[in-house]
Length: 474
Image 1 (cartoon, rainbow, N blue to C red):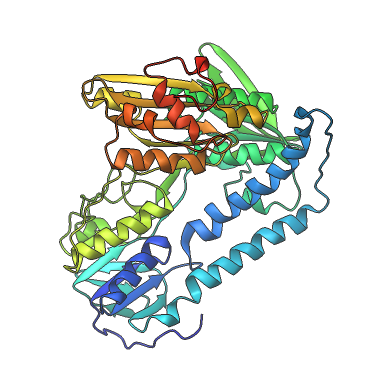
Image 2 (image 1 turned 45 degrees about the vertical axis):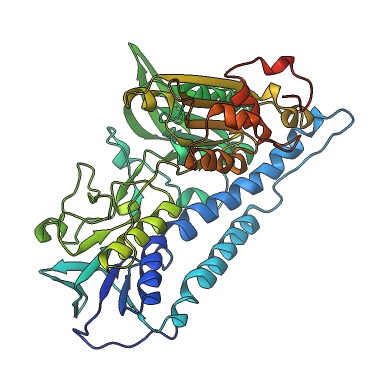
């Protein structure tokens, strides 16, 4: 680090931010722009999860693996045959590291010298009374924001502590690719990286207690499962974990489905059973900061904790675990804490994406959530075989599901599973933000031969059979 502003012990600040990831930087910059003096405390590699071990490296590898898969399925177009291969795995891993390093430097380290109001310190932070201790320094400020992020969590399975495991970081840092891999967990991390490994030529088995992406609409989950099976990824869902053991060939995982017991052995075991907040050893309980059962900090809609003067944002809280919501939550916290523009944490039109292929994306309420909220619900499910873009691409994997209120026709939410679902979901987010009805969405003009046109067709499906329409009709 360079050009970091020097401080003296007990120097007064307007704000202390603990954590130098997306939420921490968002908070520090928001406060500095308002003329406040900020102490930004980082521990470990600057930049947090997203740039270092999360979004950036995983999406790099997803795109890399996608090129191999694209060659493999090129024959879906008549007269075309293609091939692809990994020629240098070590070079690919290094390219990932280079990208991560470049973005970390540009978007984090190089940002700090541009803000004279931000003082950066490195070290583990702990609350002591009304202050924050960082090594030998005791920092004081009327407001504290905690943004320490999270870490991979390993489910309690007999024997798992005695076997060799990989997490989402070490998986993408392997010296060589294994012949086979078992993935524990069917959440977004497990789904994305299982498919990456399979496309890189690894024999992959995914094991999950319920189904792939259990929080998604069941139609979406099944469509993704079918896509995985087509690519040769083995799925074992609706099971309970029994035990793990190291073998001469790798790692064996025993599972149960009813009275049946199955043992799956692979060369490597990747554990993707969730994440937990980084709250241990910070003195939070002693300071009066309430945590939930999983150890996350409880916050209200102003991002304030149970302790006056202490706020929290990002993966360390009990809110959404997305980098953009971490940054947003930090802005909400700082605006409220420093008396700037009052803000509330509102995720009702928050889009989310799983970068599988086909991509899974959603916004608003699912059918089950809408029913639980007391709405009388109507739904529309449109397969991509009805979307001209998908037909032209010779790739009709996926569907679009919309959820609406019967009484008002207002859209309540929707989900998309499509090769270009991530770039389509924002249109639906805008529709929800401005309280559009299914009728209004169905009457909106969309460009032909785009995936987003599927939203119009899905909206029309509430009333008509779009298979009976000609191109662009309606």
